Image (cartoon, rainbow, N blue to C red; front, side, top):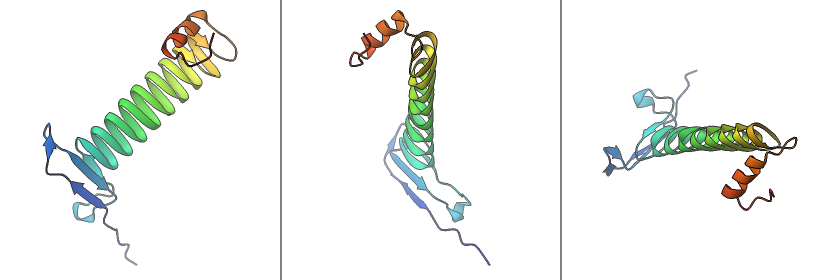
Amino acid sequence: MQQQMSRGIRKRSVQTIFGLPLVDIALGPDPEKNESRGYAHGFIAIGDIAKGWIALGGVATGGLAIGGIAMGVLAIGGLAVGLFALAGLAIAGVAVGGCAIGIIAIGGGALGYYALGGGAFGKHVISAMQRSQEAVDFFSKWLPFLPLK
């Protein structure tokens, strides 16, 4: 019995920015190009694998990356790596997530120079077990809405 691969979605705008299509959408397989996944590359990229200034996909890389695995300046996803990351597992300069690793880390489990969380480890920490005054001062300055003092 022969298995038939369905065709995914492919849309690419004619307009370009910095030599990239303004919008590139590539979802699902493309049997004509022998692709099992959609690879989108544009200013705004939406695809199974997306790369762009704004990227949304299963795997996304770009300035703003949102995806299952996201890498970018601002990365949001299940696993996010970047300058700023919000994720289940966030690794970044400023990391917020269930497990956060960064210079500034906020999460259930946080590892950083400044760390805030239930299980936080680092140089200056606010956790269930310890409370560094420098961490309290730092987080109170940048997150004044938190009742830390």
